[in-house]
Amino acid sequence: MNVLITGHSSGIGAGLTKVLLAAGNHVLGLSKSRGAETHPNLYQENVDLQNESEVSSALSRLVYEKLKKPDLIFLNAGVLGPIASLQDTKSEELQYVMQINVWANKVILDWFLNHKLSPAQIITISSGAAIRGNFGWSSYALSKSTLNMLTQLYAHEFKNSHLLALAPGYVDTKMQSVLRTKSSSKFPSLKSLHQAHGTAHMPSPETIAYKIINNLAEFKKLKSGSYFDLRTTKSSG
Image (cartoon, rainbow, N blue to C red; front, side, top):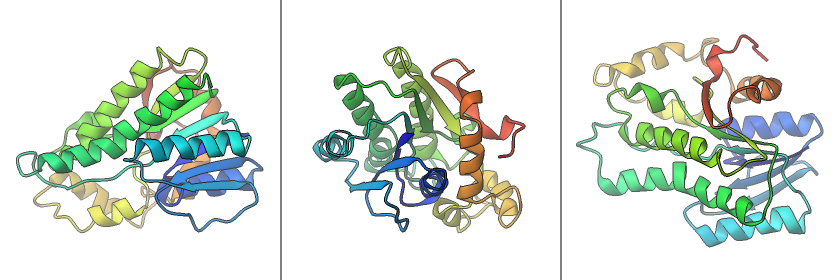
């Protein structure tokens, strides 16, 4: 299987890359930096996801020059943005987070539509923050809720693909490391996140990757374009 992963060099993307390569798949990685993983079946392209022409050129190289048409896509790349009240979040900060977390994905999805390519499955990595609206998550929550709707709307246009906005739950990544530096007294929703660190409630990227991959067939039973929280599935990996 050929799998395209954005943000493959760290976090969940790196976990997915490692697990998929170990299972004999080919991974097409699209990130701002090269990952530590090296493998003959890993094809990496370094791009600025804000640059539409860079993204399009990188996709052309991966899909046509490497002759690797993706069967599965993970639109995983994302940024946290500031943890602050919406009033204290600057418009340019909102715009940057939206560009990376939402509009870069539109560029990729449009590229596949324009080239008449229909991967069997497309998964956008969402977050529970998209639906909870907790204080402090302003730019991130706005971007992920928009990503959910983007996924739902594109499900109408990718008639031969199954789309899903997937919230993976807590994962021990660099993003979580940043969140642990923020005050849970000022931002109460962070308390449970802080408490989860170092426990089974904060699994590694590889653990989450196994769980995602082992549930791919189950995801397809959901209506295309749906939002799904991985923590609600009974299968652990």
